[in-house]
Image (cartoon, rainbow, N blue to C red; front, side, top):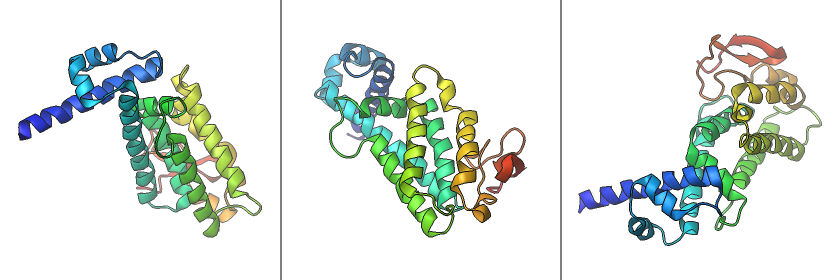
Length: 229
């Protein structure tokens, strides 16, 4: 019984990944279940045993993507350094996830289309988290005087989701350099002066590790020792 359950779980995961690969490349409507089952290495019957329809498979892909994005923002929050640092780290983490995880990439492809059903979409989840963290940063005195949390959240969400959409044609939009450019522009206006010197961004900011030159960018664009190490 245990062996059958493990085999069924592996088949389901193979179908979710194959579905994600096809949805990410072709979109929901043109995607073929026959192509997905062949890519997963299973029969059409096995596919329909696990998923009653293409919509059900697409929903499973999006659900898996939501879990991955939630883990990404959890990791950023748990790393320490305050709410504003968590927002910065999460932007690097999310772009890296979209670039490297086809399930997350497909989840964003699907979340704005016909397939989306129950619960908030990936983009809505991301927006709510950014808003919550910026509100916390404001309460903690990390935002500059006069900064609107709503406006700041809208700007960050629009920019990062714009990177995600544009990456469909050019994956360079997901690069660390692109995200660093965003924070080079935003942080000097967003962060309170005393907080700006404590926030790091740049190479290594998504994982807490060091970049090729051993550091992360801080106030004034100067490269200093990575505060996460």
